[in-house]
Length: 225
Image (cartoon, rainbow, N blue to C red; front, top):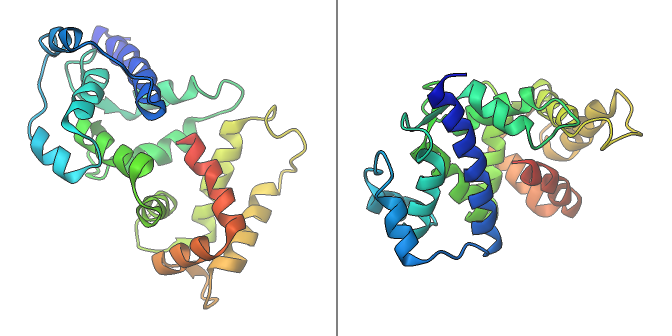
């Protein structure tokens, strides 16, 4: 592992810890410490005011998130291999590589093969502080693997199977091999309103909002993001 890749991996671990503290409200920093750390950042983010306007984070929060994302990796971008390595650490009993691949693609909205700070913080803003509709739109895009504007059974099965693989056999000891298919069949029975074999964004959002069981099921996906 190169020096930058190693620093980037360490930095993303710190980023995850910082993000957890931010979400739980336990992130308390002294202003002098904050000023000192900001002087050590290799590259300051451009358009911070624009990001503040586009996200649900304050400028202060963006600065803290930026440190955790970039201070340990001067390149300022995360590739898929590094993303998978980081994600696998949180699910040691399962195989997170496939789900991490799908999640990486959802973050990489520009299809560049790497995630910039702007990509990361925009997605986090939706997932952590977005409205229910915004979160469901983001989740729909995650399931829409080929990005054609529809979710078919194969796509949803791939995502659900990847989630089960990631959580591992110790988390779900009683599940059968066809559990992902059964899960998807139940979703489609409720979501595919016109029975055309695909789920549109409108069908997805409507089904989720009107069915409490589906909303509870979606908590599984939110918890692993």
